[in-house]
Image (spheres, helix red, strand yellow):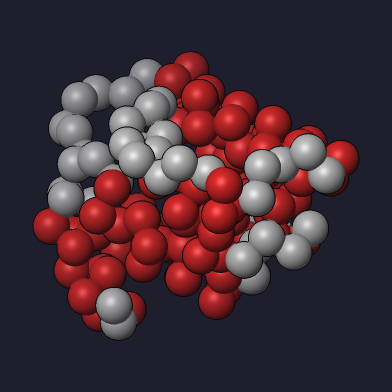
Length: 129
């Protein structure tokens, strides 16, 4: 998928270019490189839920910011440990229905298992949803 198609799909879900740039900024703060972020976004754009128009309170915004930070930091740990973006996308696809906070926990656990050598090899993972 090219970048233009990814952006169109993202916007079709109700997000703006400002939202996309904010997502990039959140990942960049934790050391994610642009090409890794872009590749990840292209792989998950179809799984992103539509944006809602509900009113969001400042406490919820802060909680979401913290969740985004945890998620981005866990992704970066896995990438730094040598996990290919494609493998990360495959592994996380099965958790796409979960809340981002739960996904962040899974990513953190996955990073621990990868560092200890206990992460099940991808070819042995059952990839059904």
